[in-house]
Image (tube, rainbow, N blue to C red; front, side, top):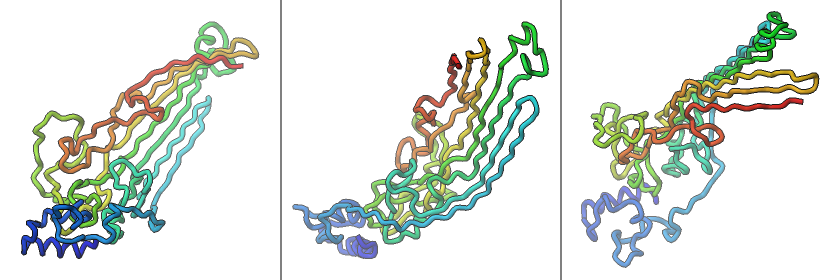
Length: 313
């Protein structure tokens, strides 16, 4: 629908009470059904081609911008010790990150296709800070090393190595949505109204997840006839912290064969990493993260230990 027409309809209905119509009924599916219902809520159709309910069109009209700073430190020490660290600060902007596979808690389509400038904001993949580091240390003991290169003790300490990966990053941005309230007359989900000085609402139900987002008392549904004032991707979800390591020993059986024993530990400190919080205004779990970030193989994100024995030849 054309937003100006919808605004006029709401004003007209409020003043004339035609067909029992009120401003609250000039929204959602009523705009599309119009006068076609057996008992219409509206006296006439409010949209063009209302037989096509929420027809969608995808166009290549998006714009984006990226600003970044990348640094790297790499050092190889004596005795087979290596260390590498990377830090990236970046800020990505766009008005459509991915219309086919959007980031969690992001809209698929614009809130209003007639006003795409309102979509300009933080990209859904905007990670402002990311630090990663890795290290490898081979113990200097055993045959061919500087210490204990012979004898029983040297054989026991031979072939041991320790390596690890550290990853620290800030969270992904997400929307605060006001579902079910077609305040802008577009038929699309709108963003909420934001008042940073609002009164927080204390939780009345047992928490189903940790509170990682703002309080629902800071938001309200947009008033009829206009969009919410909240920019796109204004808030950021929880950050991510992980430390994985491997302790391994390689034992030479003969010139051809070797036996490697590995202990792999994922999320060594068992630090919980949570997904973005529930962003649907009006949900009982609004502002709470209801799931944890798992491993890339879809297993739990909690600490994991696994052991492996490999025959090398």
